[in-house]
Image (cartoon, rainbow, N blue to C red; front, side, top):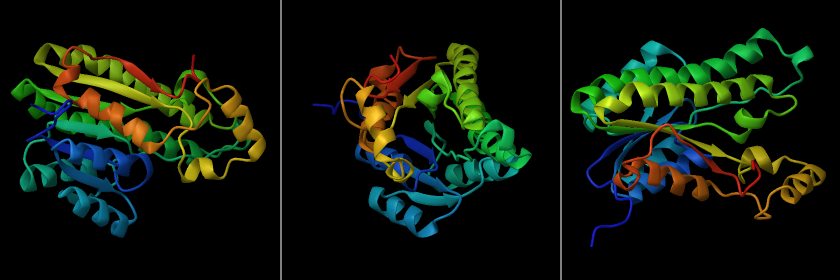
Length: 246
């Protein structure tokens, strides 16, 4: 019997794939049978460890830089083969109220989160179009749907990813390339570990399932959207948030 949501024989590239949600995605795609390229910007040891675990490769690149991104994709193609699955997970935060937000705070978040997603989509799309197949999953956030005080830059970048996802779904769909987004809610990672007990309580009170999500919850949704079981799904934004965003 064929395993559900199998990615056997596929080549997958996961940006920001060395820790947190990205590491969980890399592991899940590896378990699904994909050969995984784990992209990272810093933290070589962590990236090497995840790559070794999934039998893939670790590749350093700043996806916010177009030339670096093109070199990343060419390296993956030369070592593993053409990219069948792209997961855009790389992202940063620079939280502060807009009255205090510097140009650098804005530019760094937009460049990494939104421009980085654009750069990688552009770099892999040409060959996907020629092959008339491919799956792209972009990580957005419930913050991109509903906003959050002190995160104007992050919210704008994640909302932009939703628009980019839908535009590319229409643009690439005629050639069999699917583009979807996953919008995590509050996930138990290093970023949420610093939340105050008061704020954590507010979040849980507004989450019907009554808990924070795990990186593995997000990774399972990404795996499904990358697989042939999702062959008729494109342009969608799948919330993985325990019902918080309803």
